Image (cartoon, rainbow, N blue to C red; front, side, top):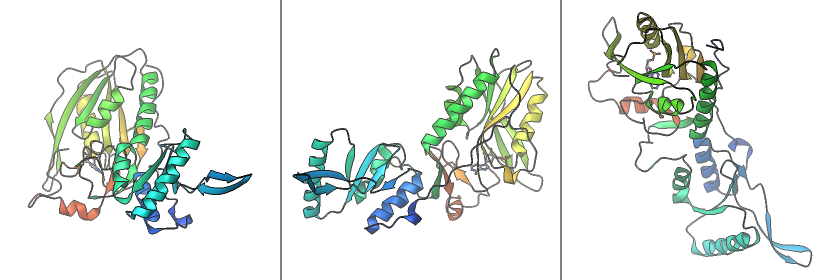
Length: 317
Ligand code: IMP
């Protein structure tokens, strides 16, 4: 195997807010900016004016869309339900499209914010559960880019071998399915499952074991998140007893500030702060797994979502 164990410089999960330095003409614009920040969508406020009408050399009518979203290459003009304003804006937009057919611009009613973002893969999707979280920590686009990078690196490091990817259900489902499609080597995939039992001792129990032997194989443990490191520590010891040729760990998220058991991480997607996150496979009480991004759960939502009589420790992973 080429390459060495390396914990690559994992990006910090980004925090975006350009709102504080902008003065908006209307409160609904500030609200829209807030929603864009929430989903991690970059924006510029009124960055460009388009001339619409001239008298001689003199520009006598201009149109300045409220926002430009560089990631989507889209201008957005917000509007209210007042019909006279809508008619006027529609006239200007028609004119703009005639003069600049290459410019993408959208007139947006307040109620359409979320629908627009959902269309581009950012927003709450259909009936997905979105009420419990505070903010988006890692967007769908950032996940795509980082997972592709990780897949490229793993493909280089494991060249000439047929690694066995071992994932621990269920949180790893999204990451595993995206990561394996970015690895350009013959490989096989195994899944294990564990559950946690509470009480004074506490501990991990394997509820689903590997389907095949891994003796002599190059094993890559694929994890959604390493928090205290206890689960991984237990599993690494267990897998070592099966005599693989090598074992390395690839985790999407690393909450290193909470580490108790020191576990070697060869590949880390994102270093994240000490907050409870959901989405992209990660759940709280089985909810939120289907969000296409990673979001921070509101602390109150952890209390609200807990079924009566169920302690947080008695859970499947
Ligand atoms: P450990 O503390 O490293 O043993 O992590 C145990 C497991 O707890 C992880 O594999 C996750 O399933 C779960 N977990 C830890 N932190 C989070 C989180 O922020 N969101 C969702 N699940 C988490």
